[in-house]
Every structure is written in C-alpha cells, then in structure tokens.
Image 1: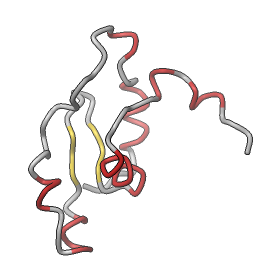
Image 2 (image 1 turned 90 degrees about the vertical axis):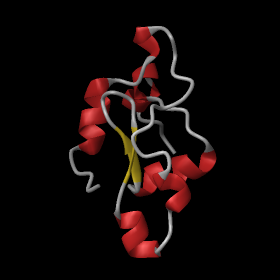
Image 3 (image 1 turned 135 degrees about the vertical axis):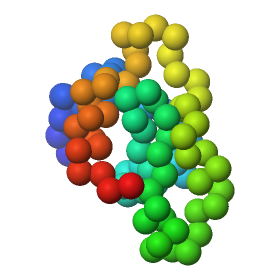
Image 4 (image 1 turned 30 degrees about the vertical axis):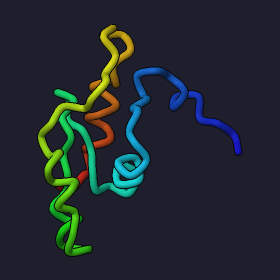
Length: 86
C-alpha cells in the first residue's frame, strides 16, 4: 500500500490508547481544537453502552507534547470534525 505523504506529518498524528483509537477511527470519538475528547452519543444509541468512555468526555487528551509545533494541527482537527456527528 502506498503511503499518503500528507498523513506522515507530525501535526496529523495523535497518540491514543488502542480502544480510543478504534473509536476515533470509527467516528465515535474525536477531539476538539482545545484537545478535549468528545464522545458521540451514537455510541450509546447504537450499542447501549459506552459509560466508561463518557467519563472521559470533555477531558483534555493526556500526554500532549509540550512543544507547540508538535501538537496536532488545528486545521487537521477541523477537517476531521467537519462531518462528525456527535
């Protein structure tokens, strides 16, 4: 598979534990431009669970880089969230 070079920039990266990463990829979890976790209500509607994840809703992503040039790109976050239905 050929890599998309735009996806290989630091600002397009986000380190999440595996279960959060899975939810992120599936559209049930995202972050906002203040780097807070947002958990979609669809998780409860579609699976009748997610209580553990809702405890994290609104909390800041842990272990963010201290250097601002290494933070996730706000433009990438906005692009990611443009079609997100929370």
